[in-house]
Amino acid sequence: MALDLFSPTKLGAISLKNRIVMAPLTRSRAPKETGVPQDLNVTYYQQRASAGLIVTEATPISAMGHGYILLPGIYTKAQVAGWRKVTDAVHAAGGKIVLQLWHVGRISHPSLINGALPVAPSAIKPAGQAFTYEGLVDFVEPRALEASEISAIVQEYVHATKCALEAGFDGVEIHAANGYLLDQFLRDGSNKRTDNYGGSVENRARLLMEVTKAVVDVAGADKTGLRLSPVNPFNDMQDSNPQALFNYVAGALNQFNLAYLHVVEGGMDGDMGSFDFVQMRKQFKGSYMANFGYDKARGNAAIASGHADVIAFGVPFIANPDLVERYKTDAPLNEADANSFYGGAEKGYTDYPFLNA
Ligand code: PHB
Image 1 (cartoon, rainbow, N blue to C red):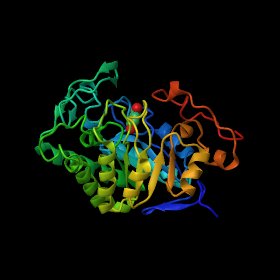
Image 2 (image 1 turned 135 degrees about the vertical axis):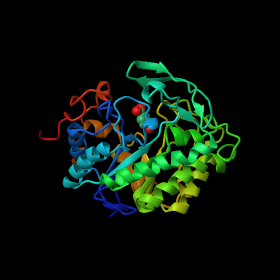
Image 3 (image 1 turned 120 degrees about the horizontal axis):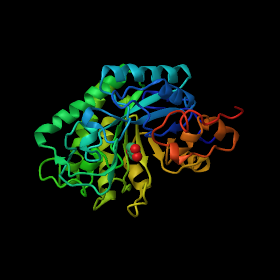
């Protein structure tokens, strides 16, 4: 029989009961002062444990990694204890869950990071506004990281990975997409450095490779995934030659034997232009997680054709905790309410009905 969304599989060391992955989704429902996951967050993730794999919301690896309000973190003991309740609940419900490691770089604001200036590869202010506790505020010009500061950033990824393992996650996903710190280094619209971390494609990919090596050394390659978004202009991103850049990155990642490569195959505010995802996918020898606007039919087709091994669904999982059952039975889907994506409490978070509820 042909493979489809309901076929079990393995991503590295992680066994999945199906190929339907819950994509990482910022929901801004953690407490402001501590970033410690609460019972409400436990309920939300446990409700979705029938996914073959859950990728958590993007989670700051350090105080400087924050760029939005009400984010959970993964760098204090209390956060580890909070996440432990999430992983225990997901595991008790028969699910698997990996934590997405996040540093936002320049997509922040001093008011979110104790008055500090956001850091970036280069001192280039992104167009747009930060979501702060005081409302939307223009981004500021970030501070270019000194080469001597880079090893401390890598160490933040190491610390957060240790915290994630201690919290009981099945693995970690390195967030190198969507205009945040690692993506800011990759793309030449945001990286104008003249040292070893800028210029050539190899140099722009250096920080990503250093972070990946460091995370793999702690978690094991078979428990480490990585997410890229080659054509997403979100967060004021540009690159002069995305195909060359991301073909190179996909190929260079083969040295690690990662559990999977996760690719956002589109742009959140429109595409940056033509890009051949099939060509990029061919550079990568491991498992491939496809994401961006997939539905059941397109997901099944991508798996049957061999383009993707698993499919990550975002918005459908916000509105349908039992998305797997609904796809399996061709049941109608609940509509997602965009007004309750970020912030608030149960409404639009844990109160979407299950089938036969
Ligand atoms: C968001 O909060 O809007 C957000 C967070 C992480 C992403 C993309 C968007 O990767």
